[in-house]
Length: 394
Image: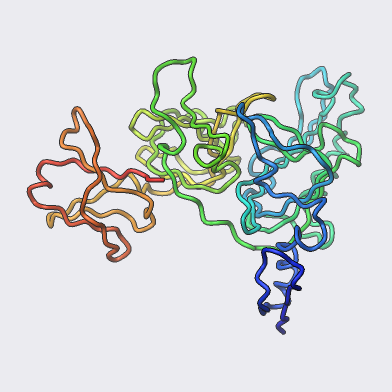
């Protein structure tokens, strides 16, 4: 059975042409139209929620309740260990923790938001009264509540489209997190509701470290993270989104272990051009640490470690490792230079000396898409004297 939906002329910014959809899609259409169909005081975009000032701290003005809609990028047990572990505040541990990331789904919205709860809130809430924390029994109930749709009992998993209704949030580490503001009282709860199951993960945006990091200046007092308050460029542009980082090589592997704690699942990578970045391993196995160049797919995040600034600390929460696309350029005997068709936003460049490179110049030959690969025919004389690379262009 199909249903025809027609938006009235009073609805701005939506096509008024009737369209047809299956009944199972009706609820999805209604959810995506939420900010225009009667909840303007509660509906919020991820883009607005994650606005920052010149220090990278939150520029969003708190006003609750709010509702955000998006795609679950993570399974509930993928990032943090929610095993109950009540401890008094004097023990200095948060006990069980739970976290997910939701990426924008509304047309015109961008980015994503992290949702977090912890067990032993007395650790963060003065005067440290242990009644502020969740008992093990209460914690299990809280986790079960957030892991399932309240209407259907559906167990949430990445790829589901959900709405999150929140009564609180806090800024930390460079991003505004939906949370309970370290309160275990029910009025601070946030709820997650299913909009559509198996909606599907968004295609990862492909980028390289040139878009995220400056080359290392060997000055420990400076940060190489590219920060842009407008979020047009740099790490803020991709925060909370699913991305694919190209052409990485591992420098450290101690954090390549799913059994490590959150703070110990960190590894350093480089693009081989004096840029460096941080990957965070998930709580499931990614296999052996790669020894060659690779691409990493996951959630772009930030952990600046500060309540007041967020201009650095960008990282990738890794969910998948795949063979590198950007690191391999094939030069055949033709001579022909080719690279994967998925890298449409990359430019072929050349230099005449790799020992003292520079300047790198764009190849003037126009690439053609042949059998799924961008292809450039090189003058035989040039092929003997030039070195080639791919460079991402904005």
